[in-house]
Length: 163
Length: 225
Image (tube, rainbow over all chains, first blue to last red; front, side, top):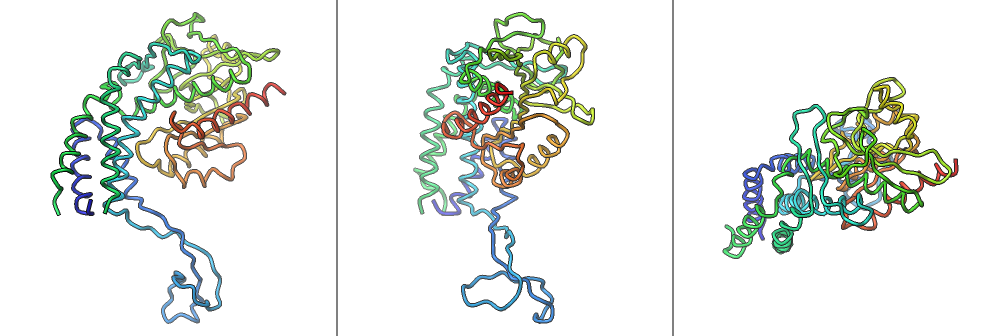
C-alpha cells in the first residue's frame, strides 16, 4: 500500500469503528497519534559566547569530531507516517475486539480453577453504568467470526507493510 | 493512488467480519477494562494456587455464589447493592486473605482510593463489612491498578498511579496494562515498591507468567512473615 492508500484505509476503518460505537477506540488511537514518536537525540549545549544565535543547544547529527561543550540528549518528536497510523489502528481493533474475547475466556477459566465457569456478571454499584455478562455461549458463538476477522486483519497488516 | 480492487475487497471483508465478531455487551471502554480487571484477579488466584493456597468464593452475605458477580465501577466492600463476589485465599498456617475487584481502600491520609484489584487481610475485610468501613491500605497485601487500552496508554495514567501509591501503605503495588507504554514503564522503573507489567493478554504467555510470578513473590513473602 502507498501512504495515500494507507491514509484512505485508515479513514474508512475509523468511520467504521464509529458506526459500531467504538468511538473510544478511535479517540485512544488519535491521542496516541498526537503524541507521535519520541526519538532520543544526542545534543551538545552551546555556550552563548560561541553561538552566533543564542540557541541553547544543537542536535548532533554527524559523527564528526565535536566541539567542546556539555553533551546530553533530548527527546525529539516525530510524526507517525500514514502507514504507521494505519498499523496503530489495526492493532487497536485487535485489542478492543479480539483480545477482549480472549480475556473473557481466560477469566472464565481462571475463576473456575481451570475448569471454565459458564458465566460472570458485572453489575453497577450505585452508578448509571449498564450491567453486562460474559459467558461461554456468547464467546463460542462469535469465535468463527473472530477467526475470520483475525485473518483479515493479518492480511491488512501485510498489505500495510508492503510498499 | 486510490485503493486497488483487492485492497477495497479486503476492507469490505473487515467490515463484514467486524459486526458478528463484536459482543454487544462490550462496546464500551469501561466494559473492556472491567473484564481486564477480572482477568487480573484470575491471575492473582492462579498465583495463590501455585503457592498451594486453597481458593474459594463467597458473596457479601457470606454465601457461596452460584454465579460470580463483579462491579462495573469501584464500590464499598460492604455494599449489598448486588451479591458481589470475592475470593478467599487460604495458606496453611496463615490468616486468610480476600481478593476483591474494584473496592475503595483507605489511604494513609484517610482518603478513600479506588483499588482495581485488592488482596486484603480477611479479618480486616470482615470487620469492614460489619462496620460499613473501607479496608485500610496497611492491611492490603497487593494493590493493582489495571489499564486496558486499545492504543498506547498515556503517561498521565502512570503519574496517577504514582499519586495513588504515595498514599497507600500496601506491601506490593502493581500497574498492569494490556499494551506496552514505554514512558510509563520508564517512569515506574525506578520505584522499588512498584511493579509495572505490560502486554498482559492471554496470548502473551511469557509476560503473563512474569506477572503471575510477581504475585507469587508477594504470596511467598506473606507465607514467610
